[in-house]
Image (cartoon, rainbow, N blue to C red; front, side):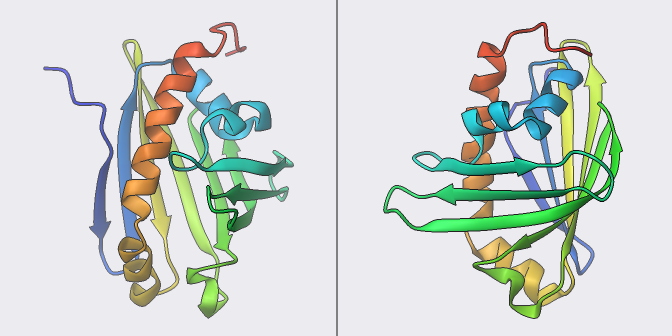
Length: 167
């Protein structure tokens, strides 16, 4: 039985959100789409939003920073630091949304795990928040809809990306 390629979002324990999605692409390509600025610009953000700043220093201890512009011109700034990089299977980083739920000043830890399947990749993203309140604020923010739309854009981008991205 083939699993649907839609986003699944679940709260786990008091501090985590776990998202899963299957993509019809090899994991090295999905990993590249998560870590290479020119690929991220093709899909990152909900429909109508554009990634206008994408800075990545892909090394343990390296920083990343994204600015996402909405259709109304408002911007969301996300930033963090990479703490683990194991291509193409795992990526761990901190994350702060400077505009929303970062009011408590603590970083979120985000872990991306990519599992290869025949012709597919299962992407599991686990976000560990500093508090239940922060996690719940994120769940109420429309994050599920935004990530779902972004992952639909990622699926489309993966179809158009040259399949010769090195493994």
